[in-house]
Image (tube, rainbow, N blue to C red):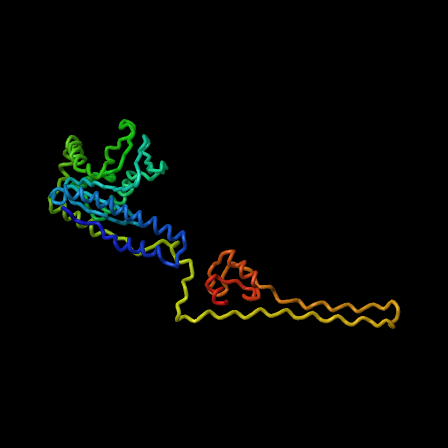
Length: 339
């Protein structure tokens, strides 16, 4: 039975796409937007492929409940579970989907690497370890919701990683590291049959005691679904705050011109030399010392009009044209206003 579908992320994609044309963001921020856009887009495609194969098998099942795109939070700990399958015998299968744009390699230590067509290889976080962290949060949630087996028996948790159907997976010797739970999305039906066979051999009185009815199963799944905490599609990290001063609209008054720096006071004239008839050896009176000029404007890489940070080139242009800019410095936008 299908209890929860994936959230619609169309609004998130549109935001990430539209902001790339914003004049209020710099090049590094736009680069992040582009990378984030493709990360979200690939994630949506991977989750959609996995959901298709899961739903085709379990949507109408009376023995399993399916929840897609489940985000839960307990005591400050969060878990984003791509797909959760709940069985009547208290079996919880956490499915992590990945849509890498390269070939996946897994070594004997359980470390994951992605190799792209260019030959570059990048280490990536283990999706199995990630799913196991999600399990710990889910355990807390089940305890909070009082979802337990009969006689207080604990539920059983299983982890599955589903990759794109066209992915190439390089695996280690299964005796060194078992990767049987890392599959392509279109292999879900075969994996489930193998999983049922393995668990039927291990079935015991404990598992049978945990068997619950269909109504109880639905009630559990709906309880869990109500704990979903969707992401805000418009939320951006702090470093995405605008950094470039937006262009002034025609209705806005131009910024006030700064008062020109006062011209330095002229030096006092030297007294005339004594006439030739003056007594021999007479000395000229020394010229009075010039009055100290006011302090020079501080050279800072900050626009004197809007307070925005400016480049060294912008500051140097203002300093080299001190008479035009009154010894201050401005961003290019406000340099034009003072032209």
